[in-house]
Length: 337
Image 1 (tube, rainbow, N blue to C red):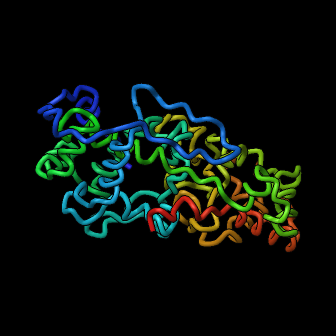
Image 2 (image 1 turned 60 degrees about the vertical axis):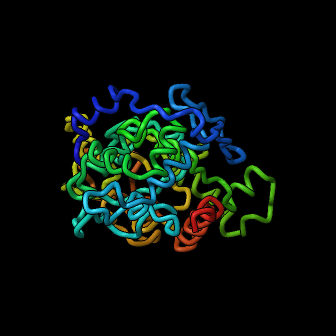
């Protein structure tokens, strides 16, 4: 994605209150009750970014509205489709006028916990992340200020903005509301969760139980990076996908040659439903992913020392894939279908 312009950043930081609404016209607002999955750590809400019912409602409406793209043809949900677990099923995302984007679309599950956004960690701020697709030439190809002006002409958006933020739609309202909505997207009700946190011994079949043991074993070492409740340590790793990377990954951000080919370790939650895989969508199936790790990578100079030939048996491969399928949680997408 393109770097967010300094102008847009300043507009968000320096936006001033405009056109306050008459108190009699305001909708009632209240704190949004987050439904944090069992077994997940508590989530601390930033006091400067309160999550309220109306902020989430406004953000949800904007997320699904193509009005934020220059030609009003695509929305955030065009690439983050609920029925595809908030991905799009494409190797590389597509924007307006069928323009090809930059990378594979990630799922939005459990963004509230993410310390970095984008696969190269380009920002640690969800509000700023919202700007990137809007202003990217190959995605929405618009300007956040002009997008906010469009919203001012729509009564429902004006009313919600004034009630939730005490200001008319502007870049601050636009980015804060979508970020608030995205922070409500929790996924943690898979068969694995039932087995691990709800003491349901029958939630996993025997193959999935073997796969779980293998996943965290010294042989596979999957759990070294795909750890914790989100199955990611949020580190940046070069997994030896290529000997030469067209997309240099984390190096774009740090300018450090040692970061060439490093990408954020993705969460494996719902991974069986979010193909294709890798930053460029180069693997179509979980079988291909498992084979890559089993073979030990392509041998890039900065490849992680954790990536080495493993020697899985065919049974172990299938057990591992079955375990990954047990990380699927369909309940979090049901309200959007």
